Image (cartoon, rainbow, N blue to C red; front, top):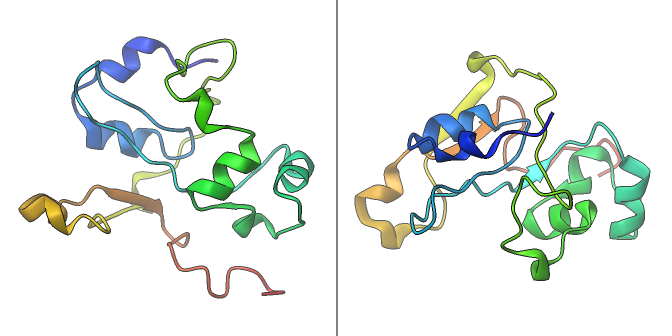
Length: 141
């Protein structure tokens, strides 16, 4: 089921970010620069197609890790910026997969020293055990 457009109008961006773990990304109403940057995914479907798109057979945890590889694996091109996430071209689905709150970890944002005290806000979310460190993610390296 596509996530309805009204969902994205919620002003509590951190709650939306937590809700969308396992689903996708969000922006707020036009003119308000809130967003969730999806930096990685652990694929459950379409693995062969993703490997074909990136041109190699990376292990699942590295297959779509980082915004560049993620976009390439999903077949998303920068020219598609601005397309509604509720269109018939690209959309986010809710497949009723719920990640328990106890497994959602929050941390400080990275690379935003310019943001002053906002840099310390806990706006980085990930699933416990799926941190940003790539070392040791795959048995074969």
